Amino acid sequence: MSDLSLPVDLPPTNEPLRIAVRRMRWFKAAFQKYVDAAAVQLGCQFEIDQSKLADNFVRWLRAVEAQKPADKAARREYFEFAAGLMLRELTAAMPLTLLSPPTKAAPDSAAAFWPEGYVSTLFCLTIHAAAMEQEYRSSPDTSPAISDLRHWWSFRENIAEDASFSVGFLQMLLGNQPDWVMPGVFRAKLQRDIAEANNSS
Amino acid sequence: MPNRLPQPPDAMPLREALRAMRHMLRKGGETLIDTIPVADLPVPRLAGAVLQQVEALARGVDHVTSGMAKLVLGASAQPSPSLPGIAGQAAPDAAFAAACYAALRAVLAHLGVAGVFLSEAAIRQAYRAAMTDQADEAETVLAARLTRGLINGHVIRGVTAADAAQVPGAGLDQVAIFAVMLWLQTDRPEGDDGAALEAATDMAVALSGDIARACATVTPAALAALFKEFAPRV
Figure 1 (tube, rainbow over the protein chains, first blue to last red):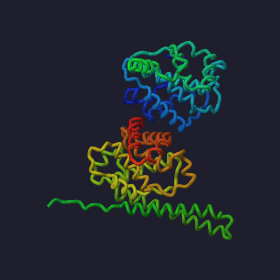
Figure 2: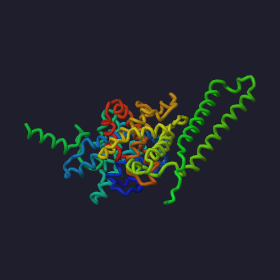
Figure 3: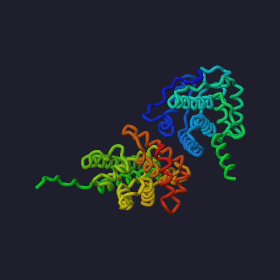
Figure 4: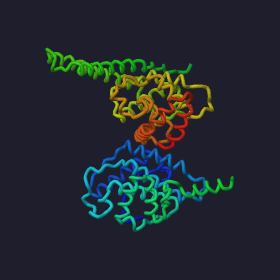
């Protein structure tokens, strides 16, 4: 995980994280806790629109279920894709409002450039990292691109055109090659569907 | 002969009557203040005193209501109620009505709606009407039929335009009742009751369009499908 991540303890749960994160009460508590910690670290204030956050969650849940692969071999890759979908929903209807600008972030940093997008992205990376650690005992690394402000400029500009760009952006931050043509479509499932269609014709 | 304790009297009709009186007094006082500003009256001091008396009466009714409920029933609703748990109780209709009433109150408070009247009697009636002998019926289908029964039974009354505006799309009653029924189907530890009910309410608001469409269909299937999809996600 990047050194940009925040040392936040996610809310306790008796369930595996991949299950807990798909419960609204855990998701809301985790987001609140993360945003509170980020606000302290960045020296700013955020307000969370709980209604938007609930919308984000419901849309994410449906998107995750709709593309869930039956093939267990694709599960690990899907974890990363699901984190990207979460970022897509958060950036498509941003639940965060900045009430006061960061006083502790470097002026040329992503956190200063777009605090709401930065915190949402790091939240998704944190959830993804925690789930990967729990399921696979592996800690994903983030790409150096996360510190490059040009990527954040591009990210913010492109999601105004297509929110699915967020999925590709997150994959890029995790050091993978995104599918920029259809970033919101799970590649493994798409390939399987095409193969099935070819076989049946 | 075994020593049997006498059945305590059913306090619900009394509670319902007292709540109705409290609602009427509150609404009446608000309407009076809205209609005739006290300062504009020829004898404002006297009018103010009358309104204070009305308010004191309403507060007295509140006190009597809660005191009576405590005296006769003890705790009004079981913690962490669930539909199967309620069905296994000696008086399931009363248990459901108590749980549903308390949860609806909390849901409406979370939505910022105050001052509506909730009919515990209508909730109890809806439960009785929805119960069938279909033992193999899925919990989601029973919940869907109950939801429709509660909506059609107008258990939430006196909703103002300002109250209704708290929820987009679907009616306030549909969303609030859906939230309670969703919550009743959610696995949760006892300490999570409040957080789960808030989450169910937020989820119901986010699903208000789906709920309205499901309620507009003839069968409970669409509502049951929504419960199946989202009860494990609260």
